[in-house]
Structures are given as C-alpha cells and as structure tokens.
Amino acid sequence: MAARPVRRATAAILTGVTALTAAACANPDGAAKGQGGPRDSAVVGIAAEPDTLSPLLGYGKDGNSKIFDGLLALDAGMRLRPALATALPAVSADGLTYTYTLRKGVTFSDGTPFTARDVVFTYQAVLDPKTNNPSRSELDALKDVRATGDHTVTFTLKYPYAPFARRTVLAIAPERVAGKQDVNSGPFTTRPIGTGPYVLTGWTRGEKLTFRANPHYWGGAPAVEKFTMAVVKDDDVRATRLRAGDLDAAILPPNLAAGFKADKTRKVHTATTFDYRTVTLPSHNRVAGDVAVRRALDLAVDRQAMVDKILEGAGRPAYGPVPTDSPWFAKGTERRHDLAGARKILDEAGWKPGPDGIRVKNGVRAAFPLWYLSGDKLRQDHALAYASDAKKAGIEIATQAGTWEVIEPRMKTDAVLAGGGSSGDPDFDQYLLLKSELAGDGFNNMASYASPAVDRALEDGRRTGDPARRRAAYDTVQRELVKNPGYTFLTHVDHVYVVADRWTTPAGRLTTQVEPHEHGLGSGPWWNVEDWTPKQ
Image 1 (tube, one colour):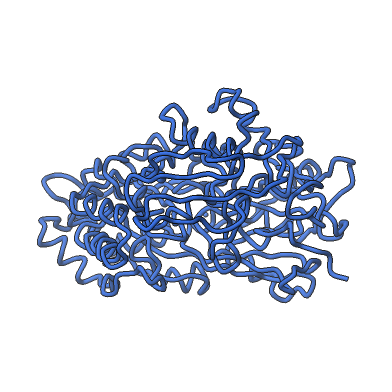
Image 2 (cartoon, helix red, strand yellow; image 1 turned 120 degrees about the vertical axis):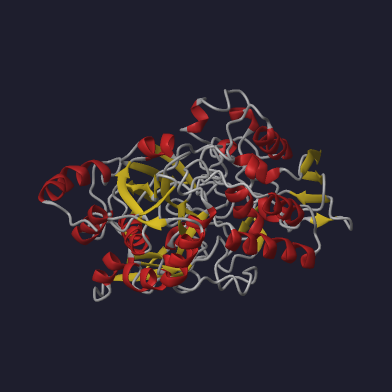
C-alpha cells in the first residue's frame, strides 16, 4: 500500500536540480551519463527506493529484481518460465507437492555455486517468525521445503494452493553469506549477493543505486554494462531532469509524460497494471468507520472524472482491488456516480446537514483528515478530487501532505490516499489488504477492515484448487465490499514511462509487463534491461 500534489517546479527546486544531477548521475569513473551518454549504460529515474535489498525481508518477491533470480520468472505476457529451475515444477495429483530441478553450473556473483541448499535456506528464513518479512503470510500454504539432491528441491504444502508456482519467483539468497548474518540487520540487507544479471556497486539512500553487468550471469552478460537508478521522489523534478538529458528514462504521471510525445528522440510506454489508488476509511475513526458514511462516499466519488482529468485516460475506474478487465472481476459490483443516492444514505442514517452544509450526527461532525504522500502528483490530485466530491454530499475532508514517517503513525485513525495491487492471482493482494487479523500490521490492512464474511471467503479462496470455488470466494469478497466498503477505491492507474529511443530487444522493441503496484526497480520498460542492445 505504501509508496508515492498539482505542483509546478519552483525556482528553488530548479536551482537544486544541477547539484542533484551531479551527485546522482555520475558513473564510477566520473563521466556524466544520460540521454547523450554511452549506449552501454543507462540512467533511469524512479520515484521510490526499497527499504532493503534482501529477498529474506521481501525484496524481489515478485521477480525482476536484477540482482537475484527466482526458481521461475515471468515473461512479457506474465506467463511463468524457468529461471534457476530448468523447467516448470512437477506437481503431484493432489496438488500438495511441487518438485523443481535446478540449473547446474550457476554461481552467485561472488563465484560460489548455487545449490538446492540456498533455495531451502531462503524459504525457511522467510517463514521464520524472527524474520521481519511483511509478506510471510503469502507462503502460509508452505509446510516444508527440502533438498532432495544438490539440484532438486521439493516443496510440500499444507493445502492445495492454486497459485503456489507463482510464489516461486521469489529471489534466492546465498545461504553461505546471508545465513551467517543477522537476517534483519546484517550487511546483506544493503550489500546483497545474487545470481542475477547485475551486481550492486553502490547505494546512496535517497539518491541512487548503481549496478554493473554480471559477466558470469548464467543467462549471458548484459550489453548494458552500467545501470543506474536515480531516486527522484518529486514528479516535476524527474520530468525536468529527463528533459535536461541527465536521465535516459523515467516513470512520470500521464500529464507530465504527455509533454514528451512529440519528442522524436524518446518514446512513451504505457503499462497496464493492477495498481490502484484508494482511500483508507479507518474503522477506528468514528466518521470514516461508519458504514453509512463509507457507502455514501462510494457513490459520491466521480471515478470516471478522475480517469479523464487526472489520468488523462491512462487508467480505469476502480471498484475494488480487482481491475474491471480482469477475469476475476465480479460483474455487477460497479458503483455509479450518484450524489443524490449518497445524500439519501446519509439522511436515512441520521447524518443531517448542519448550518454550514457539513453533516452532523449525535454531535459528531462528518469530517476527517486525508493524508497523501508529499511530491506525488497523482495522489495529491486524487485526494483533492475525492475531498471535493465528498463535500458535495456534506462530508468535510481535510487533505494533508506528509512523508511516510509522518503518515504511518496516524494510519489507525486518519484516512490515507494509498496505493496497492498485485498481478497474478486475487489472493496476492486481497488477503493482505482485507484480512482482519492483519489490521495494524504495517501497511497491511491499513483501514483495519473487519468482516467475518470476507475473512471466510479469503480463506476459502486461498485453500482450494477448485477454480469454480475460488471464483465464488473472490466474488463474495467483492460483493461484501459493496455492502461495507472499508476503502473507497478510485482508479486503476496505468504506469507511463518515457525512454530515450536508443535501445532495442530481441522482440524488436522495448516492452512492458502487466505491472503490480510496486514499480521502479523491477518494472517498467527496463524490466528486462539485461536483454537490451544499443540501436545501430
């Protein structure tokens, strides 16, 4: 849910760009890189950086980590393909046993061999309650993992878990290194060693991550030998630096990316995503936690206007975590924009307009704060539009910007303009978002949403391999969210990237995948930068 107002770049910001550029876009030998730089190097601008680079703490769990590989990976069409495994797993008839045969001759970037021991260590460390991995519950189905040879690994499940193979894109860590350190605070968390196509050469927090090609990569040494990810949190500054030429590529909000469409030296790439913007309605807030208020807000919000005006068409209305074009979407759960209906719900629930038009019930004013991440244009614009729509129904929402350090302690009682979304399977996002027992667990279930019916459906969807039963479970989840929406889902946001037209791939062009909420290091047109080659 974590990570990422309309604001023009001020003179102060522009003045600081030169100094920031010099720091963030220098390669190890001091030569400037960027739009006009050498074609064996690339500098991309991202909006956020990870908290850690350790797969044991959650990094690389969805693949494309650059430093690491999983047993499997996802191709451009989001189909599973072998990575550290030689083939897709052999699955037992009862769906409880998955066996993988591993590649031989693969080494970590320090030269040590990759074996089945490293796979067993990685999964056991993630499942260890002492490991600070916020996504541990994603492997709830896993009962046991063991090496049945130097190059064979067998997973045993507690119950049939249909998407388990997709969980094995999890990045693999070396037992000989990470196993000899404190898993939560050891040097491996910031100086990792993996089997992937790139080796981390430096990480200056808040500024940049630098990589060099792994010459011993089992998939072949990348042609882009130096790769830099410049961390530029402010959207306007990222666009300015891209235009100035010290970034080769960047993720941008649609309205800023539009300014590059006429530039013949760059191309705009749009990725369809599961990434949504939503407003958390905390159960512990006596206004936002009221079901009538939640239902009224669900009707008062004009989602299509947000898609048209904020996203400039690069997205879709969102009615829950499942996009409307997903086969898992429950038809009939779309909510129309109905301001009169919203007012009627509030009237019938006893929320009556006060002298200033803001509703009151039992002496409680229908007002609450809504936080969004500083520097994030899309979140600011969504927050302002949401507050404007809510006020028309008689609900006063005060928007406030802050860093996550400011926002996180307030999440229990204050609303947040949040983001989320995980591609691949409905369990991946809905469980962490809605399971009542995860309320207050970091950025999981930020609204402290609690519904026995939803809890039962989430468990049912997770614990069966029967497609019809799974569909019925996730249909139930979406229909319960109509009755008691603990979040107001606003839009599903396409990710828009601008990239210098200097590289190609075996496909003949740069491509994107269907992306989750998280983007930057693992997503974007550089999801397969190891396959890029300079255009002739």
